[in-house]
Amino acid sequence: MPEMANLQALLAQIDRAIAPLDEAEQLQMAGEVVLQLADLCALRAERLMNQWEEADRDPIVEQGFFSDLVRQTMAVDLTDLMEPVLPRQPRKSRAKPPALAEGSIVQEMDKAVVLAMAEQ
Image (cartoon, rainbow, N blue to C red; front, side):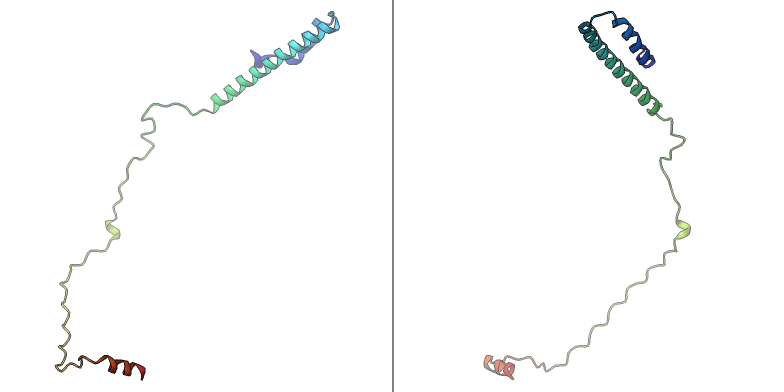
């Protein structure tokens, strides 16, 4: 149970355990202990993170659990807000424009005459 380990107490016990060894053996043993304590801290962190993630996870519920709480469809009756439709009246036909009087002024003209008129 790495989350329950007391690292300070473990370090004190290790100090007492390696005290009778010579200096080279103490350094070698201390290096191995530091490595094992680092692994212990990594395990502790991993377990604490897993516990935290599990605590914040959404609950798994069976299908239809929220069916009484969620509205699936909605109908709105707007008939009271609408004005009644008036019956359509037949269209009135437009009066035809009066026929042009006879004696149109349209006629063929010579090109030179048109150019002379344009210059004036």
